Each structure stands twice: as C-alpha cells, then as structure tokens.
Image (cartoon, rainbow, N blue to C red):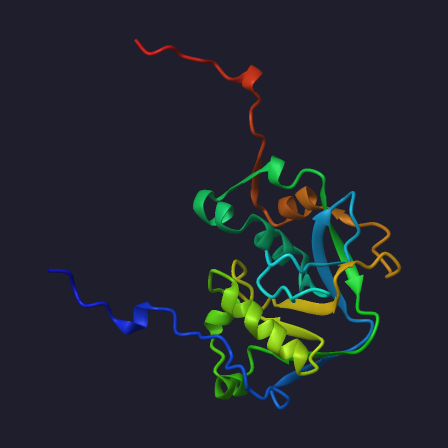
Length: 213
C-alpha cells in the first residue's frame, strides 16, 4: 500500500480568483534612476519585454515583461539555473556571446511587492516566485498589471540571499529608444568574478574515442 501523501508536500499557491481586487496589494515604489541588471545576448538590446509565455511573469499581448535583477551575479545564477545546481560547473558555451547590462529605470515604478507580509492576505505565498510551471505566476502577473501595477518585485529562484528580481511591465517587444549600458560586462567575466568554475566544453576533435574491448 502506498503511503498517505502529506498535503504540505503539495504546492499550495493558487491562481488569483477572477473577481479579486488587488488595488490595495502591498506596493513598493521604485524611483527613476535606480540601477538594475539584465543578462542578455550581446547582439540584442537589453530592454526586451516578453509575451511568449516562456517567462514566469509574462503578460498577455500586447503587453510584455522585462526581467531584471538587483545584482549582476543574480542574473548569471538565474541564467544558469538548474545546470549550476546540478553540476557546480559552468559550461562556457552557456555564457558565450552574452553580456550583463547595468540599466537605469527611466521613470518611477509602482511595483507589487510579492515579498511583503501583507501579500499573504491576498493569497500569495513564497511559492509564487519559485514554482513551476509558470501558469499560476503568469495569472498573478496579469491580474496585478490589470490593477495598475507596473512591475512585480520578488525573490529569485536560483539566488538565495538578498538579491531580488524585478518583472517590469510595458508594451511587448524591444524598446530600442530606451537608454542602454554603453559598456556591458561579458557574462563569462561576471561568472569568473563570482568564482564559479567555468569550463570549456571539448570539441569532438579533442576527444579520444576508445573502442570497447
């Protein structure tokens, strides 16, 4: 006979009810000029607002979400994710051609503070920032955006400590006119400064094929 499953071993976080009123959800004001970091391809601009449904807090089109972090190192950990946890090594190929940009908020932002104690009164738990799949978090993002919030502020899944993630809401797509970092850091250099073990993946020509005896 199978054991009885403890309800505490199941995800408790639910999607917001359709009629929920989030106008009084705890807010965190962010000021124009504050610095945040984003990891991205060197060939692409940093201000990309996703609506494809592949991100945790992606909004439905025509709006989208740009994912930022409060530290450069957090952007690297979130990029590497489960690979870093599983192997403790960083294949250089995962960071090749990628950079970390230091970005500046262009205007004041009213962010929903998912870490605030009062968020619990609305049915939010810490699971919202780390749970998979992303269906429930996306539902909350859309509900918060519909209630007038311009971003969601939360913990990061792969970055223990004080680092925070900022899911910034705006029109979907790339915002080419927004100011960018003129000298973004190479992602591999940021990882090295973090003392992560960056290893080169050998090419097929460097491998010795041993036939079974």
